[in-house]
Length: 363
Image (cartoon, rainbow, N blue to C red):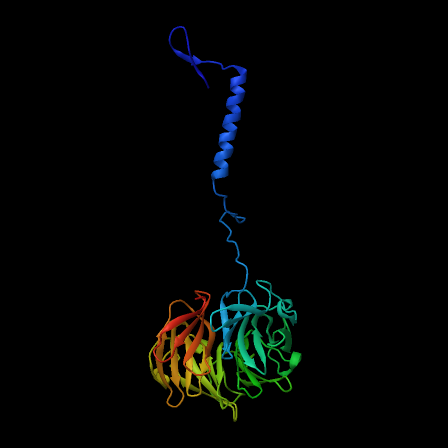
């Protein structure tokens, strides 16, 4: 509004010439346009208003779970983005199989294959064997071709039946290990059972646990032993070692007769070092073995523990920042332990001689 003067000296509304008013309006419009262009773009918002994060592209870790190493790289099951990753020892990452954030059960080569929250992983006979947890089956990824197949279990069909290939059923299987001689052992977590898969004939049998009879901690032969949501598994070829997670115990199965016994842990949540039942754990999960020592990812204690197989003595290797994932692997020379870190979406490495932790990926 223009300000004019009345004959009495008081301010009053006045009028501008028509041409001047039009020019002024154009100038105001141009000024607002310039100011708007100078402002940063507002972030995209979700349905309820908060900004939406832009998902990064390319290979990466997202809630890494099971790990194994062939000496040149560490392989990781990405349980949240449904891919299998390879991280070479220099820290470079690539995707072996699966599509980022796309779930399913399709077999195929590389990105044509789909997974659904893969968890456990082990290397045997030139292939990665993966427990595809939310599909309740086992997948095989041939390393030379990246072709994915389903050798045991049936996608989206849970159960506890033994049998051949797809006739066998699992219920949320998690960690895997191999004896290097043609057998894979499975922590069938949802069934609270320990299973084995013969690679020669794809027969699945149960060596411990009593689904659907419920959880427990009974020792004894396969027909009587019980577990409670076991998640970690490792073998030296003579025994299968099990993190009996919800029981806070470390168990072993003598493969000569499939007899289960308890070797460490009191059953109560704790972090005490000591021998056998004098030690305590808090939801132990992933395991790794070097022949004489069993390493334990003691998840809720945020600690890497070790158990001497000769004397059942438990001690603490190191404490870690963040949350331990369900992956643990030992290097071929036994000097470096790799673990999945779900807080940082990372793979960390531990010098077992001194407990020092350094990142493998990302650096």
